[in-house]
Length: 124
Image 1 (cartoon, rainbow, N blue to C red):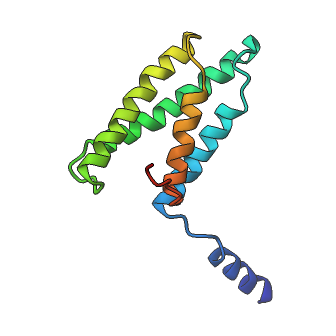
Image 2 (image 1 turned 90 degrees about the vertical axis):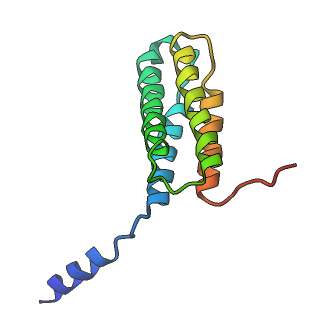
């Protein structure tokens, strides 16, 4: 009887993930993949291509969601995020063509992660 009770409580102890924490976790995973790359190492190009493409897919999905009338974010914020999504799309193409660095993509994701954690910097 005791093992069943322990198993029941163990399942209940699994943390509940909010939408915001799930978004954060996804950004964190993709940003870690980007950060782990040495973009100057030509042998890592397949991994680089996968990482930037996965990141671009996330931003494309976010853009699609931002365009729906049911999105509850304020319209000005939605517009700003859509602009960032477009920048990510264009910059990803430049990275894949080896004409740009990963740094802006990493910086953008890191800023979004800070925002999701409520660590927004005050404007100067």
